[in-house]
Image 1 (cartoon, rainbow, N blue to C red):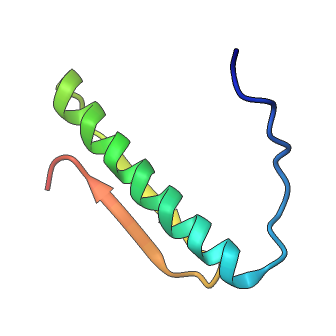
Image 2: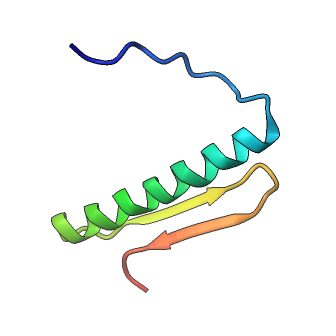
Length: 61
Protein backbone atom coordinates (compact mmCIF):
# COMPACT_ATOMS: atom_id res chain seq x y z
CA UNK A 1 0.00 0.00 0.00
CA UNK A 2 1.57 3.29 -1.13
CA UNK A 3 1.22 6.81 0.06
CA UNK A 4 -1.68 8.94 -1.04
CA UNK A 5 -1.44 11.42 -3.86
CA UNK A 6 -0.01 14.81 -2.86
CA UNK A 7 -1.58 17.93 -4.30
CA UNK A 8 1.13 20.30 -5.52
CA UNK A 9 0.35 23.91 -4.78
CA UNK A 10 2.27 26.99 -3.68
CA UNK A 11 3.22 27.09 0.01
CA UNK A 12 1.84 30.34 1.39
CA UNK A 13 3.89 30.43 4.61
CA UNK A 14 7.24 32.10 3.75
CA UNK A 15 9.26 30.19 6.34
CA UNK A 16 7.83 26.79 5.37
CA UNK A 17 8.37 27.63 1.69
CA UNK A 18 12.04 28.51 2.32
CA UNK A 19 12.64 25.34 4.36
CA UNK A 20 11.03 23.20 1.64
CA UNK A 21 13.07 24.94 -1.06
CA UNK A 22 16.30 24.38 0.85
CA UNK A 23 15.61 20.68 1.46
CA UNK A 24 14.49 19.98 -2.10
CA UNK A 25 17.43 21.93 -3.55
CA UNK A 26 19.93 19.85 -1.60
CA UNK A 27 18.13 16.64 -2.60
CA UNK A 28 18.13 17.66 -6.26
CA UNK A 29 21.85 18.48 -6.15
CA UNK A 30 22.54 15.10 -4.53
CA UNK A 31 20.59 13.34 -7.31
CA UNK A 32 22.51 15.27 -9.97
CA UNK A 33 25.80 14.22 -8.37
CA UNK A 34 24.70 10.58 -8.18
CA UNK A 35 23.58 10.61 -11.82
CA UNK A 36 26.93 11.97 -12.98
CA UNK A 37 28.86 9.47 -10.87
CA UNK A 38 26.85 6.33 -11.61
CA UNK A 39 26.22 6.92 -15.32
CA UNK A 40 29.44 8.75 -16.19
CA UNK A 41 27.31 11.61 -17.53
CA UNK A 42 28.05 15.31 -17.64
CA UNK A 43 25.37 17.05 -15.60
CA UNK A 44 24.66 20.74 -15.13
CA UNK A 45 22.03 22.07 -12.74
CA UNK A 46 21.02 25.72 -12.41
CA UNK A 47 18.46 26.85 -9.82
CA UNK A 48 17.22 30.38 -9.20
CA UNK A 49 15.48 30.97 -5.88
CA UNK A 50 12.40 33.14 -5.51
CA UNK A 51 14.67 36.05 -4.61
CA UNK A 52 16.83 35.51 -7.69
CA UNK A 53 19.77 33.87 -5.92
CA UNK A 54 21.72 31.44 -8.12
CA UNK A 55 22.52 27.88 -7.04
CA UNK A 56 24.49 25.71 -9.42
CA UNK A 57 26.07 22.30 -9.81
CA UNK A 58 28.30 21.02 -12.58
CA UNK A 59 29.83 17.55 -12.80
CA UNK A 60 32.82 18.87 -14.80
CA UNK A 61 34.55 22.11 -13.89
